[in-house]
Length: 108
Image (cartoon, rainbow, N blue to C red; front, side, top):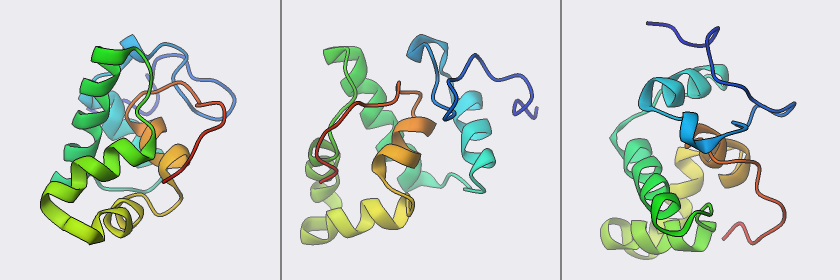
């Protein structure tokens, strides 16, 4: 089902207003808006981000996601994150994972 027309409320930049409204169908719709096909590595990052959010009630900073990716990609983890989300961690990964727009923080 194409949910691009039935997304939960988003702000003017396309970030979910309420992260609790997120599900995988919403992620696919948000990714489709950015012409991004979600592959297993994307889902790994997104699921890590969602688990981090559930535990801490705040979006994971990119450095935490990079540490998570280091388990598989070693020193290439940062590069891999930006291969997966070429327009940036905040602009793509946070948006697709259903996070509110982060204020200001390190991008890794």
